Length: 202
Image (cartoon, rainbow, N blue to C red; front, side):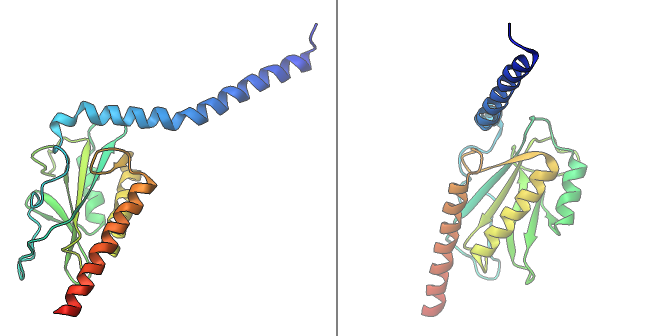
């Protein structure tokens, strides 16, 4: 006949085992749940990567033909629509400027770094907008410092996602991984290097 202590030890071991299983498999379940959430609404989202020129990035003083867009999505974890008053307040607190239905974030010199819009067509961000997806777009060729611009956008995405209980996703609408972040940083470094060569050649 097992003693009370033995029963407690066995029960404790079983509970500990279940906790370990939960912690181990939880990221897999969360990732799958998020992906299903994104897939369910994919028909309403901008399909695939944004086409170059979709958000009409341009330098009005010197029209730039080349574009290299970095796209991030902020997706509501429970698929419920964001509180637009909260969204608009957050963006204003980031010093983003409203223009033509989207928000634009600029550096100290007034150069545009990235834009924020609704991830559901037609992409407008207004008081009456209903959306559970936000889209952030950065044109590396438009930024004076592509690497810094990407870091600022990523920091803003982290801040917004934390406050809105959203997940940060890449352009393929998959949860943003460390590997993808490094890949995007490398892309920004490449554009920065190309810009440096052009400036030396000019």
